[in-house]
Image (cartoon, rainbow, N blue to C red; front, side, top):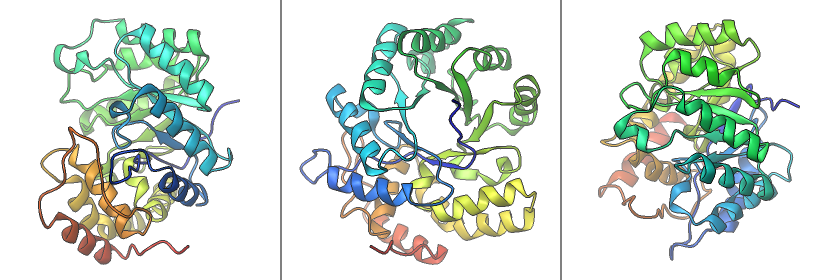
Length: 309
């Protein structure tokens, strides 16, 4: 049965204790809160926001299991599949299935970020993962300014493969968006289109079925309203929500590096009362002094209050 992601799919952070171990109590708080919100369709773990590539294989499996338990299995847990080669990515997908994942978000082979990909290679990656593991997959479109971004023909071929049911699109080039999203819609009407343009969601809200975003950690209520406004073609309401969130957007995602957004998300969750601190794993580093207060002020300006017990 196809997984329905027509709504919000947050990509949760992985909480750590101050000593650096996985904080399972915090996972329970975060997962159970997100899973309780009407409109949240899945949790997508082990991605960039979840520091998935910083975890051991055993820890990755533990995180999948912990988030699955946090929602009592009531919504799907989707796992990032990030290993470089096809064979090891397929093994990673098998481990995800065993741990309780319902689908996989398939990252490009990271060597492609620097060197580009051979035509036809991405298709083999999705095929190998599905044939070996049976794990349904989400096509992940990287930003246009990377060499791992897929051209339209590659996207169309992947979207037509068995097991591919959705695409997470973060191309961050509106010329391509306005060309490629309609082409995917026409070729595969059932393909679920999900935006991941955390730092500027508004331009994509009127073309998508849902959002798959790290932003969903910290402002799920408003993002669900934004999705509803987009589907209703209510630009005035969508723009209003965009403006309300803009202080948070700037303080989380308009930083020097998108990776800093992961640290900022954890500070956001501190502000919402889910986390006690913003511990991350290296090579991520703490934000500059004063960033925690800036983020707290942005959350206050946006009206994002602490989550009640």
